[in-house]
Image (tube, rainbow, N blue to C red):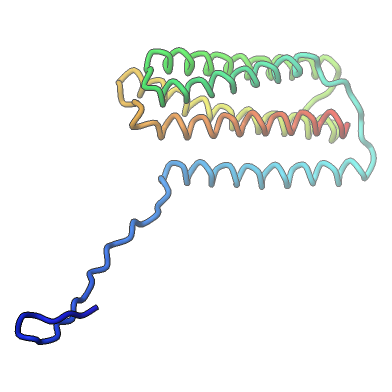
Length: 201
């Protein structure tokens, strides 16, 4: 673009290009999605191995303990309370945030306890980790999920502590968002595993 000054000389105006905002992903969100992708790949490989081994025969069928149905319900309820935790954080209601995070943590611990009791029920049926492959896979699947859920509980406890220290508000909800993403994923993962184990027995 050019124009003339008062002497009649042509002056070229060089436009200054404004810096464009750089799109970036929060590192904690990146880490949690990397975690999710890794876990999905892990369980995809394990369920594939399960189907291949099952097709080879020598596969004992057993009744999945009823307590696993109840533990599934408990985990679903915990996911609902986690959702309300995020709503409370975005609404800057720290009091409710603490309550919902505590409820979610409680149900998470109850879920782990119920899974352990389910293992005891399996042993009463004569199903052990070292035995028929069907039982071994069941222990491996549920055990791996319990380990990852324990990690999720760790994030929950960190969120609870940060809320008490007033480090979380409507302008800083990253930790709660990451926690909610991880927890909902673990809930969906368990539903997938449970349905898979029910159908492919």
